[in-house]
Length: 283
Image 1 (spheres, helix red, strand yellow):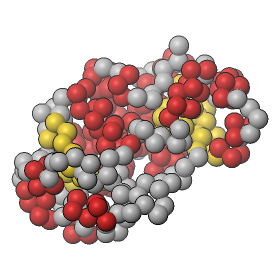
Image 2 (cartoon, one colour):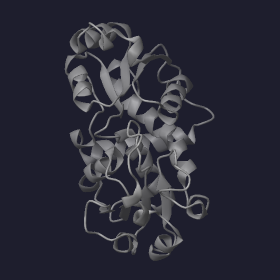
Image 3 (cartoon, one colour):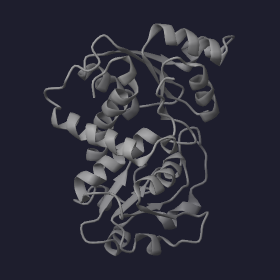
């Protein structure tokens, strides 16, 4: 069976912590990267716009000696007459792994069920595991072990927040959400938090969505002041300026958003290495 990376809940803590440890080792070799993927090819499939996912996976593969093929869904036969089963089986004969960024989580699971190679979840409407791995890597760089930390989420309940919820019991951190859909106030969520996290209120494909109900959940200086001394602010980007977070917070010393973005590259190198171990990659 190929090693897929689709849901964090598919793995135990030891496995995920091992991937993060390898990500840290690969980051330390950023300017002298080992050629782990020499001769290997990653196909990247997109039906959503992408900056960080596309560039980080592309560079990750190439820095470690591999190759990439990039396709939008409307360039592929899966958008027409070909079945997911046929697409998965054909690509399995051409490339060594597939990263998919698409809306439909069930379709990704279906492709994985037929593929003879690894499928990596680059994002669906349900989850964003690669982002959370990069986030946890960033938290541990800045604050030490994530176990026992309080991570507070503000705003919408989306694929990123759902994946934080999935990660919390695996890694042993306290995840508190303050959204219009629950009764936790922003002040209660922020109080004594180690990390404050938010995301855009209007995700891809939600153009025209009303945002008035989210304004009380904007991350601002008042919320940061309730957090622990040394608390950090995170956002997976892009930011809708200045809706879900104020400019003051996003550009403050507490903000680690660009470290977080860079760590997508290193976390994804380690995820790729984990998935490709069965084809000869030495971790």
